[in-house]
Length: 245
Image 1 (spheres, rainbow, N blue to C red):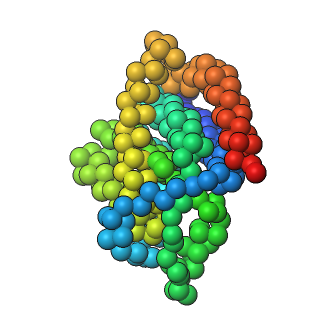
Image 2: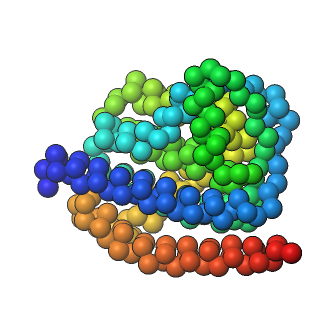
């Protein structure tokens, strides 16, 4: 496989994972928002100011998954990142169902950043869901680590790390997340990257190309993943029925 065809293969894989993530994220969120929520805000959240202008770095969370196309030489690291993202989702979804989190949002004005943020608030789950841990933050850090010590050099790595820190901060400065959401998102991402590093060699097998490694990964992970999601839906239905009057 040439470098160009390999990049095209991984672009398609990234887009498919992205679409699948959005679909399942929305499904889980629409279930979790119907469950009783808790406000886990801390004093630090009241001390953190609301800065609407940070909506612009926050938007980078949607572009960060494509960073490896500019940074990565070893596509096995992208496979590991895919696996880490799947692990991050599957484990976080259980928390979203068992512990839905909601918190107060600030009143918005009419400036451009606030108008963009108002759209986000409106599109979000009400009164709250899919917050703790922040999977947006987890994804940013998983992708960032996958890109380190590749083709960007020391200065590029430093810039990517700084960008990940700014994006993480933006999630609390625009009040899309509370401090615990963002902090646990970082921990979640690092833990899932570490776990994926242990699992990926066994799932992909030795001496395979990155593309073949990804195909093997999908074949082995997909069945238990779908079984887990089905079980999660049953848990959610049980909690809904239990909470019904």
